[in-house]
Length: 120
Image 1: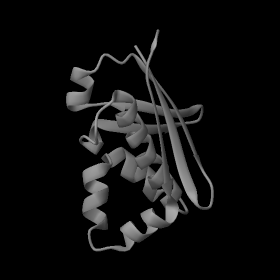
Image 2: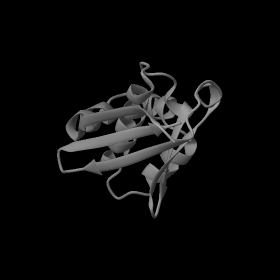
Image 3: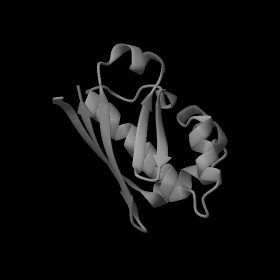
Image 4: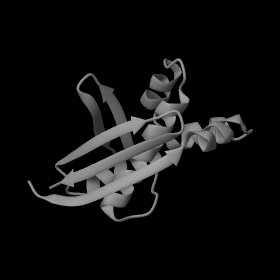
């Protein structure tokens, strides 16, 4: 398999906290994240870092694909014991020839970061 794209995104947690305090927070979550992702967030003691890393992961993948932000729910980040797994859905699944996406997520008290490597 060849590396066909690399993307990175970093996000301040305070921006996510501010966004989720607004009146549009529920519509943002439903528009951007799948039901499975939202259920995962609900189980977390502090969901903000998990929301931020998932958003950063989607951004990093879009950057690696060389496209702007698409439909957020076309990328699903599934947390596994051995690391995150990426599931492409909808148009992205049909139009890309990606065989595997390697993804690394991390956060501190202030920042969330994601790095994606696309293999074809």
